[in-house]
Each structure stands twice: as structure tokens, then as C-alpha cells.
Length: 491
Ligand code: NAD
Ligand code: 6OD
Image (cartoon, rainbow, N blue to C red):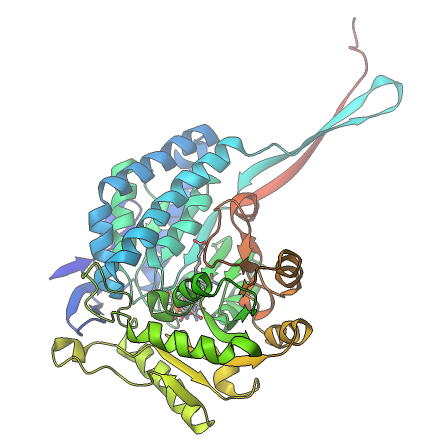
């Protein structure tokens, strides 16, 4: 059986305490994971500081650019291993893991290497009386040891999205991946070792949240900043822990995202896009739409067409290249999603599709599967329409005009993403900007240049990462202002 060890100070570390990494496809054992103790997390943080005081702390930005590119090359060489690890832990379909998770995970290192190489120096000249002047610029320095806590839905992609800029800026990292998906993070530590990242600059500790490695990292007094992706409630707990040391936090949290479909959209293209926005990764992408508002004149047509598309979906083995949807991440998460199906029934929803656990008649019945599900007929204040479910379920509702739908879509404490479908150019811009979210898509979904800002409004996050936003979060900027006299003293 595979063993996933911790990686601290450039060494692989076993633990007497282990937990099981279970496949959501059929409940089989994927690996045994070594849970980091508080002492090991302390050692990882100390190793990070020693690295900063040593070879790692002396690397120049140009040297780190080379290193990041070497990491990307090594990941590329091992992309089949990453694909296998990601699919084993999550059960996500090959088509998705090979087109999004692994390539974008690699791209994060290349993109942040490029950004660091071309990052502008924030530099200005201040003219002073009598020919003197001052040069004023911002020196970019590492924050220190950064705690990186990540979720299970896009494990490699969301981890590298934080690790790459943190290392680019010269920080050491202590990484705590989700307990559900330890595989690709362990491979990433192997890549760091092979690429020659100095001992202590990248540390990996496995474990859970409360009373385990997650909490030990979040509350560690010598961690300089926390970057976290996960549930909004977990964000609150981490923020409380980080408050003690007034540590900077960057949070990417939950969502209850709206899709707005106007009657003037390109109907077939919209349906293609909405099938992805609803069911990619079994609805377990923070950006997925769970509230769908459809202009009344095409509401019935949309519902009928969506149900037809769902009937044609292949919910099947992840390795089948034609599979559209795999299982949820775990039996625990399946039970949460099923409890929302039940809640929606109690709230009076009509089920247009799904609502059950599929019956395969094989060992997948031991996995964590649910059917793609569409409900309708609830008011906007029903709990199943307001609370994040994080599964392949959406509520569809009709609307009558633009102003009304903007108000309804924005009536949420979340504010991560929106997708808007229309062929009216002015409306596209108007509604896109009116959404109180981190990102609005028009006639597309989940498409973003890595240099642009990403994050959430409301309880969907704090701060933005991406491009210079990441480089600024992971850097301590020291403003240096040097007065230059007009003439040399002994000319
Ligand atoms: P989660 O919050 O349960 O766990 C995320 C990570 O935090 C895990 O590594 C977990 O072990 C750790 N953790 C849990 N409690 C902790 C604590 N008290 N202290 C320190 N660490 C703790 O989230 P999840 O279930 O892994 O992921 C799903 C959630 O993540 C959804 O809400 C989804 O919307 C959100 N998400 C958001 C984004 C985004 O970019 N905004 C992206 C992906 C997922
Ligand atoms: O790669 C991205 O654009 C990104 N940050 C995606 C986040 C997805 C959340 O589940």
C-alpha cells in the first residue's frame, strides 16, 4: 500500500499516527497518510526560518525564476503520476484532470516565474528645490514562512496557485493539503526535492483541520501569513487564529453563484456552457452555479433542454475518456449533499432531474456518487437556494427583467462568481459590472488569465490573488526614499 509521508526540512518524515486515503469511486484504500504532530509542524516552521536565514534567503529573484521553471519542467515530466494521484484521490474524470487540474497546476509555476521576471519596480523620482531630487522605490522582500492550507476540489491547481507565487517572492512555505487529497501534494514535494529547492523552503505536513496540522499551522506564532482556500466557516476559524499575531490572510472561500440567462442568448452555446458551470467536477468547483435565473420567455424551453442534456450525460468510471461526471469527494460529503436533496424536498421543490444515488450494481455502489440534479419552484429565501451545497445540484427560477434579476442574484452574503448569457453587448457590460462578485463571466465560465485578479466579495473571500495581486500579498514591500543632492561635495 502507498504511504504518503510528510516532507520537512528536505527529509521524508514518518508518523506513528496514520489515516486512510479512501477512493470516492468505490471506497477502496488509496494510501496510508502519515499525520503530522504539533511537534512536526513546529519543526517545519523552524526549518522554514532556517532556510530563510541560509541559502534560500540568499537567492535572487532571477535565480528563483529559474527554479520555478525547473519545478514546472519536472512536473511536466511526471504529469502521468500527477494525473494518477489526482484521479485516485478525487475520482474526477480523466477529461477534466488532464485538461484542467494538471496542466493548470504546472502553468502556475511558469506563469509566476514570468510575472516575477517582468515585475515592475515601483520606482519614482521626486524633484526637490535647487536641483536636488529623491529616488523613491519599493523593495520587495519575503514575508517569512507562509502557511498554505488548501481544499480537496482542485487539489494540485489550488495548491500550486499559492505555492508558486509564495516561493517566487522568496518565502518558505508550510503546506497543509486537504486530508481528502494528500496525493498530488506529496508528489509536489518529490518534485521540489528533484528540482533542487533548498531544504526547508518547501515543507509538507499532512493532517486534518481542528486539533490537527491545519490548526497547528494556522495558530503557529512564527508563521508570518496564511493563505487559505476552503469553506467560509473554516476561514472564520483561521482568521481567529491568525488574529493573535495580526497576520495577513488571503482567503478564497465558498460561493452560491448565480447564472443569469437572458432570452437573447445563443441558446445552444449557453447550454454547453451551463452544463460545465453546473456539473464540472460534480459541481465541486467553487465557481459552479447553484442558482440559475432564466428569463421567463425561455424558462420552459431551458428546463426541457437542460433535462435532455442531463439524460445524455455519462456518469461513469473516471478513466473512461467519455465520462462527464464522477463521484463526489467522500461519503461524508455525499451525505451532506443528500441532506440538501432532502431539505429541498421538505421545502417543496420540484425535482426536474436527479435527486437520488445512482444504482450501478457494481463496486461503485460503495463509492460517493449522486445523480446530477435540477430543482425548481422554491422562493429565493429557501435554505437550499441560499446555502452552498457544493454538489451537482442547481435551483432554476424565472425572472422578468434585468433590474429584478440583478437584485435577486446579488441577494446573498456570498460573492464569488457569476455567469451571464446574453447577446446584447451593453447589457453584458452593465450586468457583468453590477454583480457583487470577484469575477463575472459573460457567455463563458471558468476562463481566466492567471495574471488577472481572483477572489471573492462578501463571505467569499478576503483579498485578491493572481498576477501582481499575488506578488503583492506574498511580499513585504519596504518603501525606500533616497535624497540625492544636486552637486557633489568636492567637485
Ligand atoms: P474546508 O474549509 O473544509 O477545508 C479546507 C482546508 O482547511 C483543508 O485542508 C482542511 O483540513 C483545513 N481546515 C479545516 N478546518 C480547519 C481549521 N479549523 N484550521 C485550519 N485548517 C482547517 O474546505 P473543503 O471542504 O476542503 O473545500 C470545499 C470548500 O472550499 C467549499 O466551500 C468551496 O466553495 C471552497 N472553495 C473555494 C474556492 C475559492 O477559490 N473561493 C476554491 C475551492 C474551494
Ligand atoms: O485557476 C483558477 O482560475 C482558479 N483559481 C480556480 C479556482 C477554482 C475553485 O474551485
